[in-house]
Image 1: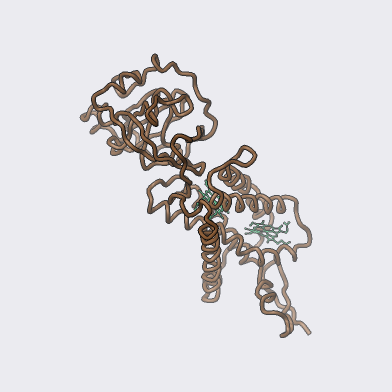
Image 2: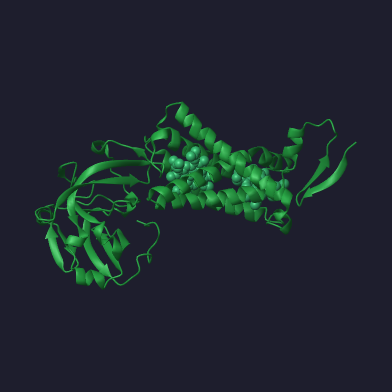
Length: 359
Ligand code: HEM
Ligand code: HEM
């Protein structure tokens, strides 16, 4: 005989006979808390994914990538419990099943990005599939949560000792899933083991692909005529490369598309071009491309930023930003403004811009 027992707000569970397998009982506990855990894991992986895109410094990048992997894989760990929730639902909505499909694509593409190295599938990189799927998931999850919102939110009892133990169990499961992916990557000799803290895979600098953040087109600039305005002065690329301070240096371009390359560049530091007195009076440096694409840097970066005219011992190609591009070591590729038109000192704080360009 089974005794009806109210388990969650939307489900009535029954206490199974003693002979029922413990594993099935475990998954039968699925309900509101499963959905809350899914929601937290989804928000966590979305936020840490963008942080992983934004952070270039090794230690914070490692912390972010590992946290991202663990929160993303928590979704996989929760599958058996969510399967019970879905099984109980009287009908399955197309939008919810689409959400499921999009998230499967997102997680698979994330794992392929880790294990498969940098390559394209049907013209797109795993990272493009991954982030594209994550962006499509956002309105679908919003729709799903609003559609099922009745009494789904967190409660005080979620902080009980038992719930905290369950949360710790989920975290341990997700951590184990992360170690399984990492271990499989290493044992199989996949490129996963050699990736950088940001998750990017190394490329030969001669093979550096031309990548564009979103919608820019490569402009047709005449290298001998194009003039770059740097605060109150103007330079052609030839004038820049003939300056006595021009030198060759190594820098690592780490692209959010999933690759990095350490290459020899040639250029001049902004600190050697700007007037120190005027730099002291500014708060930020705004670098703008001929396409209108722009990034604002804190003025303290003046010693770190270069106006480059050569890559791999040759003048820049149009795709790589000719005639002059910014080189910003330690920052992800979308900060390395191509086809530089102006460098301006500004009173605005550097953070007064979109965290990721919309162009
Ligand atoms: C990983 C993301 C998720 C996927 C793929 C997913 C998918 C599904 C599917 C296919 C169903 C069956 C009913 C339907 O088609 O609408 C369902 C049920 C349900 N989902 Fe989700 N869901 C997800 C996350 C969430 C979250 C974050 C919440 C709320 C915070 C939630 C709340 C619910 C509820 C309450 C039901 C039960 C509806 C019923 O019993 O009639 N789900 N989910
Ligand atoms: C709900 C959304 C998301 C989920 C569920 C998710 C999940 C995952 C998973 C499971 C991995 C593989 C982790 C590993 O095994 O190490 C991964 C990798 C990655 N994801 Fe996401 N992700 C999401 C959104 C995003 C977004 C929005 C971005 C960037 C804007 C992003 C950037 C990355 C990066 C850079 C990696 C590679 C990290 C590494 O190599 O360690 N993800 N993601």
